[in-house]
Amino acid sequence: MATPTPHITPAPQDQTKKVMAIIIGLLCGVVAALVAHVLCQHLGGAPLVGLGYSGGSFIALTTLIVMLEKELGLL
Image (tube, rainbow, N blue to C red; front, side):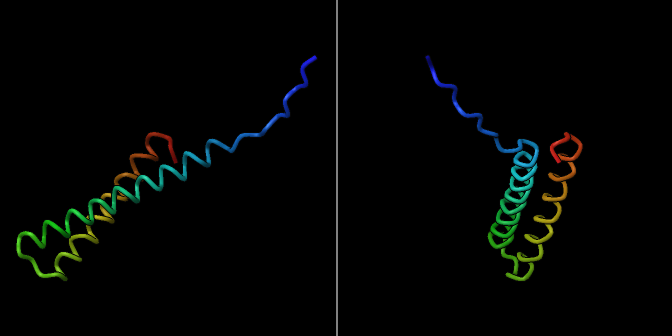
């Protein structure tokens, strides 16, 4: 006679999905910031201007991704 396997409670899927959605939003913002900074440096901008562009790109894209995730019901 087979012994029954113990019931293992899985991790809460809702919390895991929310954390992953936030991490994806932040990583998209970091990529946008790096692209903006490299592009500004490539086009001959000053380092401080590149920092400003990268900060603005990070804030804008991270906000956009989070808003889209809220509309899709991921957050």
